[in-house]
Image 1 (tube, helix red, strand yellow):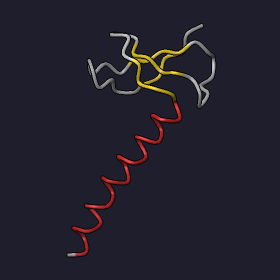
Image 2 (spheres, helix red, strand yellow; image 1 turned 90 degrees about the vertical axis):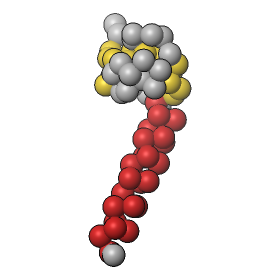
Image 3 (tube, helix red, strand yellow; image 1 turned 45 degrees about the vertical axis):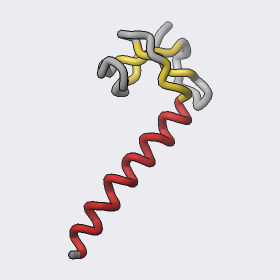
Length: 66
Protein backbone atom coordinates (compact mmCIF):
# COMPACT_ATOMS: atom_id res chain seq x y z
CA UNK A 1 0.00 0.00 0.00
CA UNK A 2 1.30 3.47 -0.87
CA UNK A 3 0.41 6.55 1.16
CA UNK A 4 0.57 10.04 -0.33
CA UNK A 5 1.83 13.10 1.52
CA UNK A 6 1.23 16.71 0.48
CA UNK A 7 4.70 18.31 0.23
CA UNK A 8 5.96 20.60 -2.54
CA UNK A 9 8.63 19.04 -4.77
CA UNK A 10 11.44 21.55 -5.48
CA UNK A 11 12.09 19.96 -8.87
CA UNK A 12 8.64 19.72 -10.51
CA UNK A 13 6.43 21.60 -7.98
CA UNK A 14 4.08 18.62 -7.64
CA UNK A 15 2.67 18.08 -4.15
CA UNK A 16 2.10 14.33 -4.30
CA UNK A 17 4.76 12.31 -2.52
CA UNK A 18 4.93 8.60 -1.89
CA UNK A 19 6.52 6.10 0.45
CA UNK A 20 5.92 2.42 1.03
CA UNK A 21 4.51 2.26 4.59
CA UNK A 22 1.03 2.82 5.95
CA UNK A 23 2.43 5.30 8.51
CA UNK A 24 5.21 7.84 8.08
CA UNK A 25 8.38 7.17 10.06
CA UNK A 26 11.17 9.66 10.60
CA UNK A 27 13.57 7.42 8.65
CA UNK A 28 11.33 6.96 5.60
CA UNK A 29 12.73 8.38 2.38
CA UNK A 30 10.14 10.57 0.66
CA UNK A 31 10.07 10.64 -3.15
CA UNK A 32 7.93 12.65 -5.55
CA UNK A 33 5.14 10.59 -7.14
CA UNK A 34 5.30 12.69 -10.33
CA UNK A 35 9.03 12.92 -11.17
CA UNK A 36 10.70 10.49 -8.75
CA UNK A 37 12.86 13.20 -7.10
CA UNK A 38 14.23 12.11 -3.70
CA UNK A 39 13.42 14.74 -1.06
CA UNK A 40 15.25 12.99 1.79
CA UNK A 41 13.99 11.49 5.02
CA UNK A 42 10.87 12.69 6.78
CA UNK A 43 13.03 13.95 9.67
CA UNK A 44 15.21 16.07 7.36
CA UNK A 45 12.14 17.47 5.58
CA UNK A 46 10.56 18.46 8.91
CA UNK A 47 13.80 20.11 10.00
CA UNK A 48 13.98 22.15 6.77
CA UNK A 49 10.33 23.17 7.08
CA UNK A 50 10.81 24.25 10.72
CA UNK A 51 13.86 26.36 9.80
CA UNK A 52 11.95 28.02 6.94
CA UNK A 53 9.00 28.73 9.25
CA UNK A 54 11.28 30.26 11.90
CA UNK A 55 12.88 32.52 9.27
CA UNK A 56 9.45 33.69 8.14
CA UNK A 57 8.40 34.45 11.72
CA UNK A 58 11.48 36.50 12.66
CA UNK A 59 11.32 39.30 10.03
CA UNK A 60 7.59 39.87 10.55
CA UNK A 61 8.08 40.18 14.32
CA UNK A 62 10.93 42.67 13.77
CA UNK A 63 8.74 44.78 11.46
CA UNK A 64 5.98 44.98 14.06
CA UNK A 65 8.39 46.41 16.63
CA UNK A 66 9.40 49.33 14.39
